[in-house]
Length: 323
Length: 306
Image 1 (cartoon, each protein chain N blue to C red):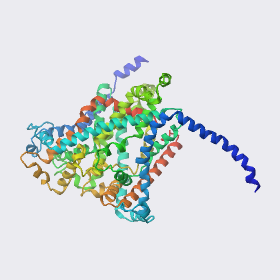
Image 2 (cartoon, rainbow over the protein chains, first blue to last red):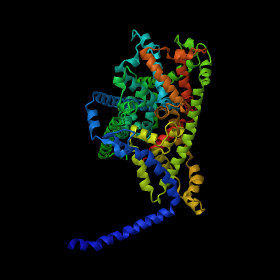
Image 3 (cartoon, rainbow over the protein chains, first blue to last red):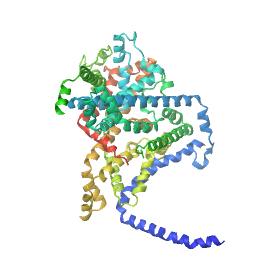
Image 4 (cartoon, helix red, strand yellow):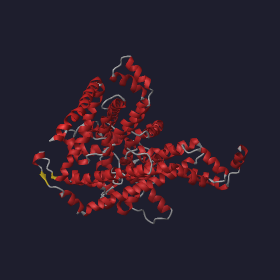
């Protein structure tokens, strides 16, 4: 009984400046009311459009029927998750997601770094600018347009089949889009075609930070071009490469959606369907909101875990943190 | 030292020069691979449709015609979709950039008591989202399905753009905002009259990204407005053509379009698709060379992390 009595004056003593602080806060807020009015509408917007959907996660634990109110929904616990993990098509979709994002990651890195190194070796600045301008272009066109281009280029009488048959590599034109096992390759190549130029920007910016005297020293020591590229430029890019690599590891379940959806068809769906398409198909297409939400939650939670691990790794390695 | 360097340069080895030539050839190859598909599409779109079926059109049309374009713009649906595409791009960009800049301005003010809380509130949304289905149901409950506003409202604030503009405002000289305040300008006046004109470089970049995003998007049309042709956009119309032609290509049900085009005018699925592809990318192809440097600037602006 003694203790609480004793601590009472202490507590009020602590409370006093707190009250003061709150009063001060509101006083300052009142002074800054124009600023507050300028941002509160957007805070409300974010609450509605970004935070309220999080409430929808409850659907994954219900047998959700849109006609019922929240109180009337039937709760089913982890049933939808159990169904997911016993469903073979879910594992296939998961495999496709991870394989496609890995292909994207590795191919994207290798090609962008190589192109940046080669662009850096161009001596004619005007030519270099021109190549850069051209190579950034596909980044800005929509995936719909890009897919249309891919379908044209890979059609039976398209340029790829034409070149391959003329060169004698193929005897007959191949129906590229109807053979499932080509899909990952096609997607990887498309991704490179669209993004490689744009992805060089960050590397080229990092290259300009490399001390030019290193190159002069190496030149005097008789290092040739390739040696200079591999032992000065590439190591100079190491910090950027590491940070981007870690950052992208956090997106391992983000294999993209548009390309797979637009290029996918009945013949290659065993290879093209990823998690996002799965969610769309079950959730919107078949109206199974609960199952779709469960798959979506799985993706968000795993991604969040990867992102945090990536951030932690970056911190441990002494690189600047991402957030 | 200089002489040594010069003599080294003059005696460039054979390997060195071979590397340079090889590199240039590679770059030209890269440019061809990048540009060829567009050139080919343009050629097919300006070529007579029935003639194009014979194949063999690569860089230049064989039989020049404008029929494909006049056919497509003769379709009132496509004409309307073009208008909607332009409208959502213009309106969406203006609204989003203005609102994002206003929000960025408030959280750039060091003395603002809500600064930290508001910033965190928005940054959190970059890493967590409700996902497709909860968002879809929300939009449905808000009554935004079958409405033009679904193209504008959900994208009012771009959090990444907010950070970019905030960094830019914070980089402005301190005295400017101070002197505006001494002159008696309120916060909103300061924002509109002083901050907006000074952040034009950042705003230009952000606007371009938002505009490209608006022009290129089709998924929101597909998800929310696919039942209403009056709200369709160019990208979505092209997407529909794409979907029929993938089925046609794989299931060899080639005459889906033939029947449509067979009524008088001579168009084929191939020419329609090529023409639509060009129409859907023409604003970007036209504007891109002139604004390209702003995009690259944006990348470096974005490097300034929150």
